[in-house]
Amino acid sequence: MNKTKEFLKIFKKAEKKYGPVDKRLAGEGWNSGWKMLIATIMSAQSRDETTIPIAEYLFDKYDSLDKLANAKFNEVLKILKSMNYNRTKSKHIIEASRFICDNFNGEIPDEIDELVKIPGVGRKTANLVLSEVHKKDGICVDTHVHRISNVFEIVNTKNPDETEIELRKIVPKKYWSRINRIFVLWGKDVSGRDKGKFLDKLKSN
Image (cartoon, rainbow, N blue to C red):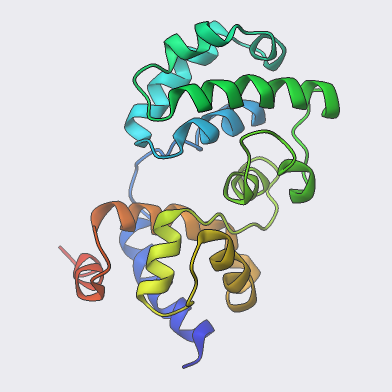
């Protein structure tokens, strides 16, 4: 199987279906890079519909990275109380803000090796920042991208980081930053790992 051709065949069908979908994901639509990064940290294991309004409230209260860096843990935790892993996320939000202020003069770095040094930032978030904030090529692999890529046997991997590495070898760069949004929207529509169910979702309504 030519994996590049197979990927492009599947991706183009999915993009035709989900490209026009007007649905905001947690890492989209922010007016600054630091908000996008913090919102993405918050979104782990949480629904976008839950994350976005809580992030908006957080950013209303702490309207600069410096203010968030100096926030009290219990105050941030109070805002995130309804989220999964709220204690860990509250800790990471403050630590990440402080780290960026102390080490990068409050600017969001544009290299993945620098981004992953930030507390709470793994390769998924780092790649999303690269593509969304800095308009660089990056493949953001979350559970949906990982699952779909394996269901269609584009890759045979055990975790999202492995999937990212393999997709980098297979997928032409011009598609890298487009994969996450399309596969996330598709993945939200289909539970499990049944290829037939995924393909059914791509049929015209």
